[in-house]
Image (cartoon, rainbow, N blue to C red; front, side, top):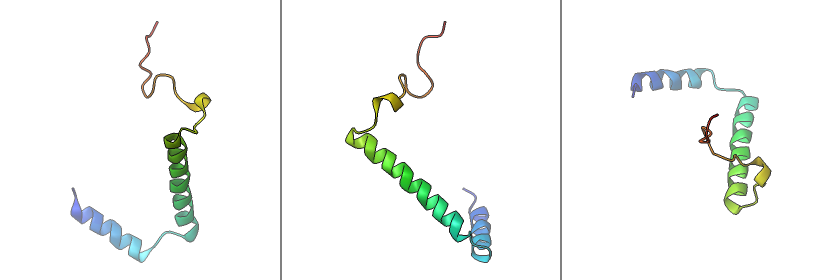
Length: 62
């Protein structure tokens, strides 16, 4: 990994941190993803929202 690049990025964040709205947006998206994950894990995810063949299709092409 490029450690110097990460240090430069961290220094930029210290000098100019993200706004409260941006932080709230990111935390909200993470919470939303965790709710979807929990619904799927508990088996409460609707069958209509599930893909038939998973990622990439996997079905036969005509």
